Length: 426
Image (tube, rainbow, N blue to C red):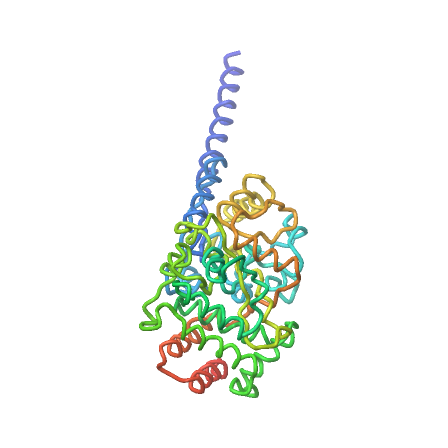
């Protein structure tokens, strides 16, 4: 009898020890997310902290890509140091560069609910789905509606801005009202990855034609000086330079200065994307009255770009398949599924992080006016290709040339030559 009791005690002890070991193992599952959207760093940290608080044994840490370093460079450095995060937020054009290190995600439930075309840039030639689409974004001229209402002496109609001349008239009208027409943020990523990419987007509504144009830049058969869209875009940039609030010192501006000036109504217009809303909201004096205008590049309203804004999936999460353990990989998968399917996860993504999700099952409507404005363009079919397959250093190299053009250090011919030299040197 004593032997039976002893045996039972040993069995119970073994079970307790086993459960204890499982608990320790579960508590050891810690994953890291590399965030390359600095404007939602705080929100993503809060989402990670909340998920950690409701998920036994899992802790999520969020690290950011340093200012001035591309997500690609940061990811490469982390891999080289043997500290690859379980989840890495990359630009769309960088996803395939990590295909040998990314975990295949074809079997994940959310694949079936991803919106049309959102996985195109995340799918390898062999059919492996390499990444989770994080956010749909777009950009253009953000406008402060009360400033423009006051300038035009009534209700401003954004549909009236569909040509170069109508934009010029609007800038002049805003300045005549006593406000600044616009402010240019001179960051290389904004000028290189977003503004000048409009010259590529405006080539055609067909993405394959745009890719042919980019190939022509690479092999030297395309001349920007002879291209109507590229010249039209720089005509618009010249107009922006003329009315820039910081025209006396054009490189002194900052992203933060732009959020403040558009939010408080010091200027009527700022070129940027919907990702800027969390910062604009900190200065908003309008009660959320903002929207988007296209960037006109000619005087024909029918020309591509004059009534459309670029929209696309700009950021993807890849899951590391090389340096993280199976338990960490599973924890990362579970977190992404929570974002897509849990009502609290959906709410925190859309309402707290101001993200337009790339999943059809998420019906939470964005509360911020910029995301709402983009959705209006989407519903009206007034969108153009957001060029997301640019080389990783495009924003830095072409952005630097744009900065020189902005500060009048080089003229248009020299700028075009620098951009062509960049492409031919790839």
